[in-house]
Image 1 (spheres, rainbow, N blue to C red):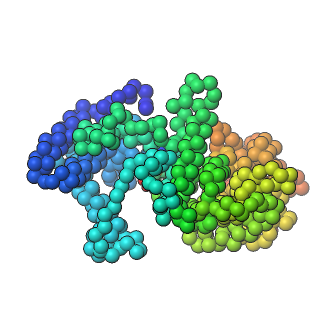
Image 2 (cartoon, rainbow, N blue to C red):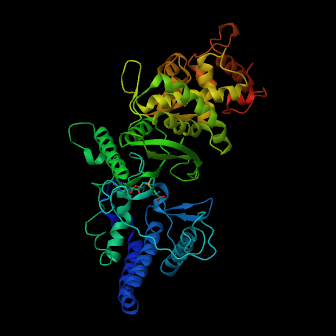
Image 3 (cartoon, rainbow, N blue to C red):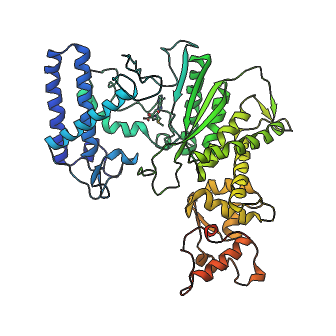
Length: 507
Ligand SMILES: C[S@@+](CC[C@H](N)C(=O)[O-])C[C@H]1O[C@@H](n2cnc3c(N)ncnc32)[C@H](O)[C@@H]1O
């Protein structure tokens, strides 16, 4: 939490607290009346919905909310997936207005959910369950690594959207609501609200703050804790899934190290990846994504139990198959609006399809090959596919530096991007390292996990290139010289900041 905020009540001012505590008191008084009038199950449901409305009020009416000036609306504390105090925060008209509006929103969301699950006439939701047919849905709250209430091999399908390392600290964020819910729902759902705060011990996230002063790096310990929990969860999913069952895993982390660990734990649990679907999902307008070189698509990995008698495979045999399948799927991903860095990540699905069929996969020297090698092959295939598309010719005759520069603009579409992505792209092309890009060629600056492409002026200042044509070391340098001159006052150059390849066709 922010300095000085050591209690949850401190994220509200006195006026906000008074309003919210009054709502909580009214809900608790109403609960007694509701319980007197309705049977237990209905009374329990009404009280739970009232608590959900209170949650919305808490989200909008706190010192962490802010004004969205473009939309003229109040954004709640959870808009950023982290807890940030605001210098200026709006206050929604108190009493009736705040509650009334949030109650309307809750009802509207509830109706949409009913439509989606087909529990409402003329619902237009998920195909196959959209017809009116009263259904009962059972929701159990349990940790994914101990589904003790589900027998072995009894489940047809598992659909899971696991956490991604430290991206979002769900339990810490949940405490923001938990402290209110336990005051309104603690007596109705005692099994969910017995502890002071939410359970962080079972949570599968990498949270370094839980591993301070333990001798080793808190980040490393937190990552290991997350990986162990994910492995246990997948092993449990394997246990409950029928032998002919299917599991879909949603994943959209942009760090290829995270992909390597996810793939390895799926394979270790006994799964193979039989198909993958890339879909544009996350809204790029989300506050936690905007301005970052974030992934905006999600890859759904379709997993089935692997034939455990399939035996081992040799990586040298699989490698060309990975490249072929990735190139074959790339146009299909592009047709579905998967572009830039998302296209590289989407290629990991087909790569895993080939890689996970048999296990272990061995190198020619007999060592076990990790999934990251399949991902490197997939990157290479996408890099070569994209370059051919951009340059309308193959890579022959283009120095690796020029290839990297073009593909970096193509993949990241921004001046700033994560260091690891730069490294991976350099590896996919081969011939130089990130240090070469920064120090020898002075194409970028790198600091604290990010790299920034330098402008032609910045490069010239660093004496990165000469303006004498006979001294050009790479085509990209020639382009930069042309760009530098065209940007000079009085010249009609293309807009500063635009990718070079947009203005100059390769020759
Ligand atoms: C990527 S989010 C899923 C979001 C969800 N698909 C949605 O649209 O709301 C991952 C979720 O896994 C939950 N989680 C973390 N550890 C867990 C565990 N041990 N068992 C079950 N769920 C867990 C987190 O609380 C979080 O809600």
